Amino acid sequence: METSIAKRVEIIIESPMESRLTDALSEAGVTGYTVLPVLGGSGRSGRWSREGQVSRAGGMVAVICIIREELLNGLLDAAFKVVQRHIGVVSVTDCQVLRTERF
Image (cartoon, rainbow, N blue to C red; front, top):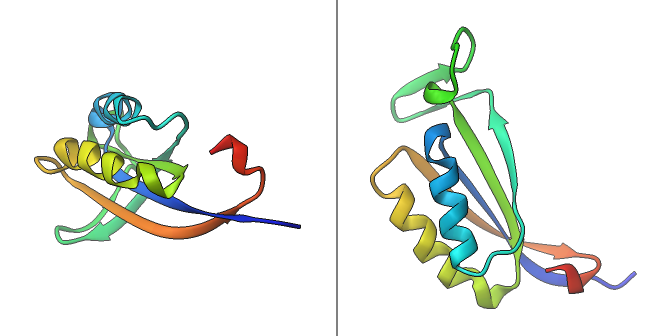
């Protein structure tokens, strides 16, 4: 089966910033993404968990997009404008996809 190379971008950010980030991605030409809740983790500030939290305000989400390489710089510029002043991590990896026309 034939695959094509694409970029997978994963952005972990505070839940209240989700709509600001997804709006910025849309403006950068990103047509699809997936948002997942992040249950916990560990970082510079130590371990954390959503356990016991009653609202989304203290939580994190992961926004994942798979895009064509030519959209990457615009996506990163848009994401950085949102992430730079908040807790967040952006990672980019190469991936291979089937059905290239969807990306």
